[in-house]
Length: 136
Image: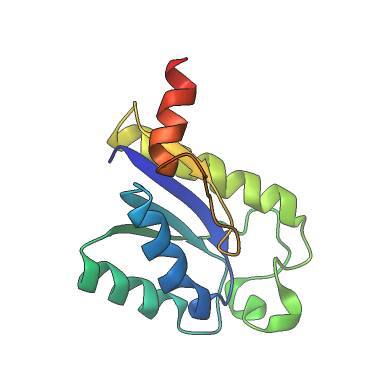
């Protein structure tokens, strides 16, 4: 792993293929995905993309710490993030993702990006632009 994206999402199966393939072409070689108790087939889609395109996708689940609902109670679209702070849950997932990335490669470049956001550059490959910014 040299370049990784960390994200947390729920019920985003319809966005995952385009999002992952786009960022893979932009130089991201690993995706650390925290699923927030999706009700759709997000996990199956991720596994299919990983297998078909040989992309490293590390699948985790939201930790639920601080949430007053268990995972079975959270599996309905009215309970996204339970009744805890979405912000706190995201921070925990992102920190966990950074630990995973750093254990694999302490020099990895990591981006925290939602699956409805695309990193773009008009001056070149996104990961090359990031490397240039870091080195200057």
